[in-house]
Image 1 (tube, one colour):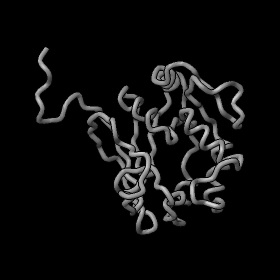
Image 2: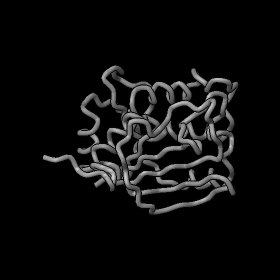
Image 3: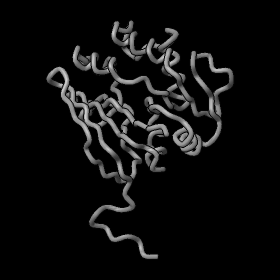
Image 4: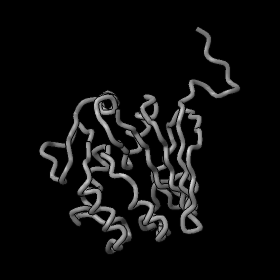
Length: 204
Protein backbone atom coordinates (compact mmCIF):
# COMPACT_ATOMS: atom_id res chain seq x y z
CA UNK A 1 0.00 0.00 0.00
CA UNK A 2 1.30 3.45 -0.89
CA UNK A 3 1.75 6.24 1.63
CA UNK A 4 0.50 9.76 0.91
CA UNK A 5 2.46 12.81 2.02
CA UNK A 6 1.23 16.38 1.79
CA UNK A 7 4.38 18.50 1.71
CA UNK A 8 4.34 22.30 1.91
CA UNK A 9 7.00 25.00 2.03
CA UNK A 10 5.63 28.10 3.74
CA UNK A 11 6.37 31.44 5.27
CA UNK A 12 5.76 31.69 9.01
CA UNK A 13 2.32 33.15 8.31
CA UNK A 14 1.27 30.30 6.05
CA UNK A 15 1.80 31.59 2.52
CA UNK A 16 3.11 29.36 -0.25
CA UNK A 17 4.84 32.21 -2.08
CA UNK A 18 5.26 35.96 -2.06
CA UNK A 19 5.47 38.57 -4.77
CA UNK A 20 9.09 39.57 -5.33
CA UNK A 21 10.50 36.69 -3.27
CA UNK A 22 12.75 34.00 -4.83
CA UNK A 23 12.22 30.29 -4.39
CA UNK A 24 12.68 29.10 -0.82
CA UNK A 25 12.45 32.82 0.04
CA UNK A 26 16.18 32.87 -0.74
CA UNK A 27 16.90 31.26 2.64
CA UNK A 28 17.69 27.64 1.78
CA UNK A 29 21.06 26.54 3.14
CA UNK A 30 23.45 23.61 2.64
CA UNK A 31 21.95 21.48 5.40
CA UNK A 32 18.42 21.89 4.08
CA UNK A 33 19.41 21.26 0.46
CA UNK A 34 21.39 18.16 1.43
CA UNK A 35 18.38 16.84 3.34
CA UNK A 36 16.13 17.46 0.35
CA UNK A 37 18.54 15.50 -1.81
CA UNK A 38 18.36 12.53 0.56
CA UNK A 39 14.57 12.24 0.45
CA UNK A 40 13.07 9.25 -1.38
CA UNK A 41 11.78 10.08 -4.84
CA UNK A 42 7.96 10.02 -4.72
CA UNK A 43 5.35 9.98 -7.41
CA UNK A 44 4.13 13.58 -7.45
CA UNK A 45 0.43 14.43 -7.54
CA UNK A 46 -0.69 17.80 -8.88
CA UNK A 47 -3.49 19.74 -10.51
CA UNK A 48 -3.51 21.51 -13.87
CA UNK A 49 -2.37 24.92 -12.60
CA UNK A 50 0.67 23.50 -10.83
CA UNK A 51 1.47 21.38 -13.88
CA UNK A 52 1.37 24.38 -16.21
CA UNK A 53 3.51 26.47 -13.88
CA UNK A 54 6.14 23.82 -13.19
CA UNK A 55 6.31 22.72 -16.82
CA UNK A 56 6.84 26.35 -17.79
CA UNK A 57 9.74 26.49 -15.35
CA UNK A 58 11.16 23.21 -16.67
CA UNK A 59 11.28 24.28 -20.31
CA UNK A 60 12.37 27.83 -19.57
CA UNK A 61 9.17 29.47 -20.79
CA UNK A 62 8.29 31.01 -17.42
CA UNK A 63 10.22 32.49 -14.52
CA UNK A 64 8.78 33.71 -11.22
CA UNK A 65 7.84 37.38 -11.27
CA UNK A 66 10.84 39.58 -10.61
CA UNK A 67 13.36 36.78 -11.27
CA UNK A 68 15.73 37.05 -14.26
CA UNK A 69 17.13 33.52 -14.01
CA UNK A 70 17.01 30.51 -11.74
CA UNK A 71 19.75 29.97 -9.22
CA UNK A 72 21.63 26.63 -9.51
CA UNK A 73 19.72 25.05 -6.62
CA UNK A 74 16.40 26.04 -8.19
CA UNK A 75 17.46 24.60 -11.56
CA UNK A 76 18.44 21.35 -9.83
CA UNK A 77 15.02 21.13 -8.19
CA UNK A 78 13.23 21.60 -11.52
CA UNK A 79 15.46 19.02 -13.21
CA UNK A 80 14.64 16.49 -10.48
CA UNK A 81 10.94 17.11 -11.01
CA UNK A 82 11.33 16.47 -14.73
CA UNK A 83 12.85 13.05 -14.02
CA UNK A 84 10.25 12.12 -11.39
CA UNK A 85 6.95 10.34 -12.06
CA UNK A 86 4.04 12.78 -12.04
CA UNK A 87 0.27 12.24 -12.00
CA UNK A 88 -1.79 15.23 -13.10
CA UNK A 89 -5.50 15.52 -12.30
CA UNK A 90 -7.29 17.71 -14.83
CA UNK A 91 -10.34 17.90 -17.06
CA UNK A 92 -8.88 20.77 -19.10
CA UNK A 93 -5.45 19.49 -20.16
CA UNK A 94 -5.12 17.37 -23.28
CA UNK A 95 -3.14 14.20 -23.89
CA UNK A 96 -0.34 13.58 -24.44
CA UNK A 97 1.22 15.70 -21.71
CA UNK A 98 4.49 17.15 -22.96
CA UNK A 99 6.38 17.22 -19.66
CA UNK A 100 8.36 13.98 -19.38
CA UNK A 101 7.10 11.23 -17.06
CA UNK A 102 3.65 12.82 -16.64
CA UNK A 103 0.36 10.90 -16.68
CA UNK A 104 -3.01 12.64 -17.09
CA UNK A 105 -5.95 11.41 -14.98
CA UNK A 106 -9.44 12.74 -15.67
CA UNK A 107 -11.21 10.69 -13.00
CA UNK A 108 -12.18 12.11 -9.63
CA UNK A 109 -8.89 12.83 -7.86
CA UNK A 110 -9.98 11.55 -4.45
CA UNK A 111 -11.16 8.20 -5.78
CA UNK A 112 -8.15 7.89 -8.08
CA UNK A 113 -5.71 8.51 -5.23
CA UNK A 114 -7.64 6.13 -2.99
CA UNK A 115 -7.11 3.42 -5.63
CA UNK A 116 -3.45 4.37 -6.10
CA UNK A 117 -2.86 4.02 -2.37
CA UNK A 118 -4.63 0.67 -2.15
CA UNK A 119 -3.01 -0.89 -5.22
CA UNK A 120 0.44 0.68 -5.24
CA UNK A 121 3.63 0.86 -3.23
CA UNK A 122 6.11 3.56 -2.42
CA UNK A 123 5.48 7.20 -1.66
CA UNK A 124 2.92 9.56 -3.17
CA UNK A 125 3.40 13.29 -2.52
CA UNK A 126 1.46 16.38 -3.48
CA UNK A 127 3.34 19.19 -5.22
CA UNK A 128 1.77 22.58 -4.58
CA UNK A 129 -1.83 22.12 -5.71
CA UNK A 130 -3.51 23.57 -2.65
CA UNK A 131 -7.06 22.55 -3.55
CA UNK A 132 -5.98 18.98 -4.37
CA UNK A 133 -4.13 18.66 -1.07
CA UNK A 134 -7.16 20.05 0.77
CA UNK A 135 -9.50 17.54 -0.91
CA UNK A 136 -7.23 14.60 -0.12
CA UNK A 137 -6.94 15.69 3.49
CA UNK A 138 -10.71 16.09 3.86
CA UNK A 139 -11.13 12.55 2.50
CA UNK A 140 -8.84 11.14 5.18
CA UNK A 141 -6.27 9.89 2.68
CA UNK A 142 -3.23 11.79 3.97
CA UNK A 143 -0.81 9.73 6.07
CA UNK A 144 1.77 12.44 6.74
CA UNK A 145 1.56 16.23 6.68
CA UNK A 146 4.95 17.96 6.44
CA UNK A 147 5.62 21.69 6.56
CA UNK A 148 8.92 23.43 5.94
CA UNK A 149 8.61 26.80 7.70
CA UNK A 150 10.90 29.59 6.53
CA UNK A 151 11.63 32.53 8.87
CA UNK A 152 9.79 35.28 7.01
CA UNK A 153 6.40 36.92 7.38
CA UNK A 154 4.97 37.93 4.01
CA UNK A 155 1.95 39.81 5.27
CA UNK A 156 2.25 42.50 2.58
CA UNK A 157 3.34 40.36 -0.38
CA UNK A 158 2.21 36.82 0.45
CA UNK A 159 0.29 34.83 -2.16
CA UNK A 160 -1.57 31.51 -1.95
CA UNK A 161 -2.74 31.21 1.64
CA UNK A 162 -2.37 27.51 2.28
CA UNK A 163 -4.90 26.73 5.00
CA UNK A 164 -7.93 28.71 3.86
CA UNK A 165 -10.89 26.37 3.48
CA UNK A 166 -9.34 23.57 5.52
CA UNK A 167 -11.35 21.57 8.02
CA UNK A 168 -10.23 21.48 11.63
CA UNK A 169 -7.37 19.00 11.87
CA UNK A 170 -5.60 17.49 14.87
CA UNK A 171 -1.88 17.03 14.26
CA UNK A 172 0.27 14.47 16.06
CA UNK A 173 3.93 15.45 15.71
CA UNK A 174 6.06 12.55 14.48
CA UNK A 175 9.26 14.40 13.49
CA UNK A 176 10.85 17.84 13.65
CA UNK A 177 14.19 19.25 12.55
CA UNK A 178 16.02 22.54 12.27
CA UNK A 179 18.27 23.20 9.28
CA UNK A 180 20.92 25.87 8.87
CA UNK A 181 19.87 27.42 12.17
CA UNK A 182 16.72 28.93 10.67
CA UNK A 183 14.46 26.50 8.78
CA UNK A 184 11.98 24.37 10.73
CA UNK A 185 10.65 21.18 9.15
CA UNK A 186 7.79 19.66 11.13
CA UNK A 187 5.98 16.46 10.26
CA UNK A 188 2.62 15.35 11.59
CA UNK A 189 0.08 12.56 11.40
CA UNK A 190 -3.21 14.36 10.63
CA UNK A 191 -6.69 13.52 11.87
CA UNK A 192 -9.61 15.46 10.42
CA UNK A 193 -12.04 16.51 13.17
CA UNK A 194 -15.80 16.45 12.81
CA UNK A 195 -16.00 19.32 15.29
CA UNK A 196 -13.67 21.17 17.71
CA UNK A 197 -13.14 19.57 21.13
CA UNK A 198 -15.45 22.00 22.95
CA UNK A 199 -18.22 22.00 20.35
CA UNK A 200 -21.11 19.61 20.80
CA UNK A 201 -21.77 17.38 17.79
CA UNK A 202 -24.83 18.27 15.76
CA UNK A 203 -27.92 16.47 16.98
CA UNK A 204 -29.28 13.73 14.75
